[in-house]
Length: 304
Length: 52
Image (cartoon, rainbow over all chains, first blue to last red; front, side, top):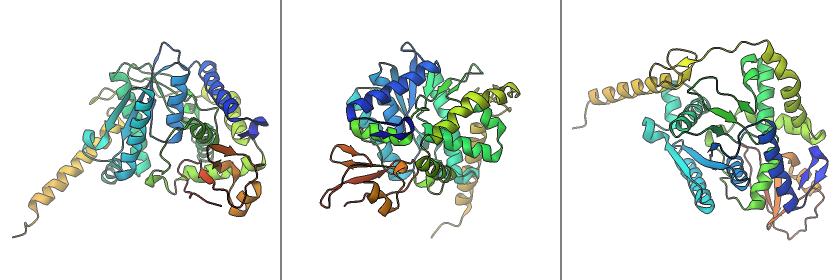
């Protein structure tokens, strides 16, 4: 396996060793967690999250999986099945939250009823529910499988948009700034997407190859394509972009930036900058639309 | 491998190539009768399995 950004090529066993060392180094370097901490790993059934869970278990961390079933037909069923099969094979604990059961609607219907695009409703639901489950079950930290490619693409997008607020927040560790906010960490931030796929194949991890049907045409893909063109011609571009940002640019931005104070949502108690958190606003709007729809159905002429 | 990916118009940064249980590098040789899988690695990417 070639790792061109490090001018290196490894045989299978040495690649696996190198990969796990990179993850361990990220955890230590950023002081993400220790073996005493209870880690909740957000797992989708895709390569990155199952690889992250696998590595954390191998490194001896106390890692429990959390899968959010988004209610996107066969895609969600297959995704959950991959997570369950992995958990069984590893004898690890998997928690599952079923969005349609909790809210009465899957992510696509949530998006339709709330007027958001599916990726926005999905991201909001994930952030909220991962944090809530972690709090309710007493986890110390939530680990997500964002890799170097994800972070570089998001960074490029935020730079293009001049989104200073998001740039200040973009980090491998998001500290808790509210009693109801669990720390969030990204142990794969030093690992390229191609490397997680290689790790999954070499370890025999069975992940879902299909992509979310809603991600087709997503802007992140365009940004990744652009970065991969640069990477092909100049190996190390993605790493330099993101790591230089973290070491040289973000500290300067953060030093001149005052973060908005977090309060508690009057409905659910979760952290928010407003009176009612974005997730409660979303679910209220959806419930309201559902009531209107049910009422319209009742009043419609019934077939004789 | 390098030539094959170029012929298919694929950026090597966006795929891994699998033969049996082995991962191929860009310098690996691929024969006419080899069965390989070219697997996209970009999340959200659309790709197909190619056979040679």
